[in-house]
Length: 561
Image (cartoon, rainbow, N blue to C red; front, side):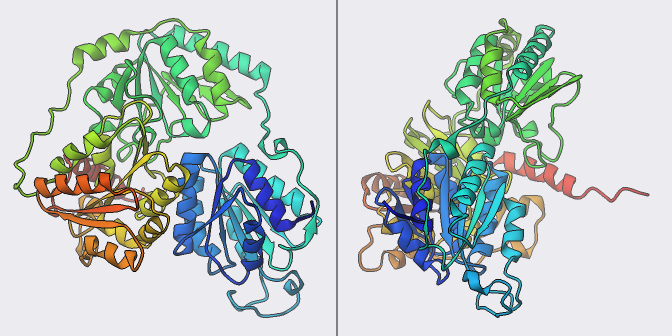
């Protein structure tokens, strides 16, 4: 079989486990798209615009482990790179593939469309290098296999996005055949000596602590170490808390799970037990102004051990070149029970009071929405929660083992959840997909609901219509936080056009919401958007507290000279 640059790329994408790639057509990538279509193991999925294409791939990577998006040069890729920045921040290996000018035009003095109107065609590659772990430009078929392999291999190793730029006249040029998949999927083992030293030092650290606790962060998934974290928890017998962005990365039905640690807005008892501990083992944690509630909740000092994806450090020790999963598994074999935090947690534990049932004809409120969503969450459910109060609503959902929860807390791009939900649903059609999103965020990326309709994906979207950006209101209010109201439920009819099976429902009271949920569960031929109309100020107390502290951090005056 003869290979072209395009079919070589398609083969490699298939070898790393992709069954789909997302695309927006443009004249610089049309031949490439044709070449990719020849691979029958790789389905081409189309998006409404390049930003959504990037975020769809990002959502796909959350479910599948890796993803690819194909766009055109400059006017397409510069838009998609916003989403690629999110994939970098969230540790997701998304391969962004861009068509590029004809190889003969480089250094020719020609002016080309879709460019800045200069003879410099390298600016996109230079920008991509800032937002990816590997960025390559292919203007020679002979060099294509090595460059493609380098980009994909680096993305999988680093769990970060990569960028591949292919000149439009090179996509169909013949090149060498791909070798074994291990050329791009293989990983270097942990350094044995360093691993042994790190485990010995960490075991000594824990033996000196009477009341340690494990704190799970969002890098745990990127490290492929969820199973090993459970092994360490079982061996230690101590309390385990998760950071908000890591919800579902540790099983919530585990007897040692104590909830979400998020400073002032932690689950009942979680903050108290972490603060009471004399040794916090931070596993894959990310401490930023959002996750620390304006720098008010960040474990520090000699009682903190940080185990990152390939580095372990604590007072007097710093080990690199070891995989987190190897470290956790080995450490689990060397520790003894330290269950003081579980004994203390049992003493101080308090449950949130259950949300009272509202009268069916009572005005719809946020708490009633959350109460009615809870029974929908099964072990086969994934909940994607948009930036804003949807975070806090989602965090109140108790997840059975197998359920997943997805947020984008590091990048924090409002509108992320609509295309990410689309991409996730493409990757995991067997799961029940629920998206929680506010009206303001929805307006940024609403078009991708049309693609859910196109592919008949039975996604359930709960859209909170409170006429604005509530998260921004709680941080810093002003007229810029108001949005033009839409007929969100009615929008689905426009997206359906002549052949769609999407459903748009509006709920203004609990009875209407219950009826809309029944419609959503019955509709397996497309998405159901339930527009939940609530008051502008109807938000969680947690958002109010969190917003106040983040605003305080934002408002710190400049330091004096």
